[in-house]
Amino acid sequence: MTGTTHSQYGHGALIACDRLVRIYQAEGIEVQALQGLDLTVDKGELTALVGASGSGKSTLMNILAGLDVPTAGSVRVDGHDLAGMSARQRLAYRRSTVGFIWQQTGRNLLPYLTGAQNVELPMRLAGVSGQARRSRCAQLLEALGVAHCGPRRPDQMSGGEQQRVAIGVAIANSPSVLLADEPTGELDSVTAATVLGSLRTANSELGVTVLIVTHDPAVSSMVRRVIAIRDGRTSTETLRAAAGDGTGDDLGHAVEYAVLDRAGRLQLPREMTEALGMRDRVRLEQNPDHIGVWADSANGSEASGNEANGNEANGNGHAASLDSASQDSASQDTAEGAK
Ligand SMILES: Nc1ncnc2c1ncn2[C@@H]1O[C@H](COP(=O)(O)OP(=O)(O)OP(=O)(O)O)[C@@H](O)[C@H]1O
Ligand SMILES: [Mg+2]
Image 1 (cartoon, protein in one colour):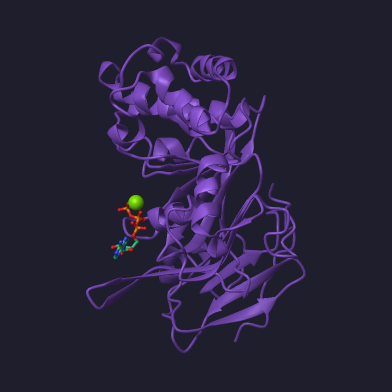
Image 2 (cartoon, rainbow, N blue to C red):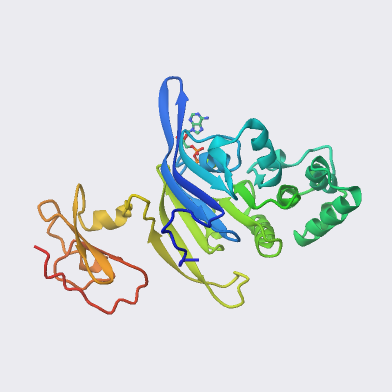
């Protein structure tokens, strides 16, 4: 998935957000919740979205869910242009293309219906026959590990069971995308793991593309792709190499990437720039396989940056390096050009 071509932005992706902006007006004060966010998600991915409180995660999820509209920018999900939909199209989109799970367990299920009735409800609304509903419902509850919750009402289920039944409700009509905004936020870590297991089942066995917002490091360490949102934009991405049998239980080591947006902007992690005294401007140098970034010498401190620089053994300090693709650059750029 790392090799996805981005020559045409979002081409072929299931989800493509292009310079997405969402500005809230609250009592005359403008809040820029999304500030030109770019994001693509391919069909079949299981992705976690992380970021500080207020960074815009829920705002993005609500837009993807068709519950809110962007102020500017474009967003496509499975061929639907979400910025330009009518109310009727939006309703159809919510019924058939996306499934949504809220953090609050009580918000996902109707309290007076059993688990099975909850899962069958969206199919009933979509006009699926009784026989087909019952068999799909049984299949889903079984796959999600909550077959025993079929005859129970939500108040007879644990929080984790409610969330797993909620996954069944959300994917009953085979949506292309399942969106979960902190689905384990109210659960203890053991229960959270079972819910995550069901989300992974939905992804791997039932073929749903899944996007999970989470604060839980355990969740983000269990998925292959983690996207960090900072100040309303995607900032970094961590990809874990899949190891072994592909169930994802034994994910390999993680590599963190900075997100390069359409305009060529990227955000350098603050830890890195501060360690090298970088601010205001940096000097760039193109190399055959990477781009070198140096603190402006007029600005930076005299501290040596060598140990903060994993890739370059130059004597200049203040350097970060942006490798083009893999880490296998054999060339030890000595950056003769610096200063
Ligand atoms: N309806 C609204 N009206 C005004 N401002 C809003 C509204 N919803 C969100 N915001 C603001 O937009 C920004 C992004 O909010 P959002 O809920 O997307 O953050 P979040 O990343 O989901 O945070 P958390 O991790 O706390 O759930 C915040 O500054 C928030 O105060
Ligand atoms: Mg939120």
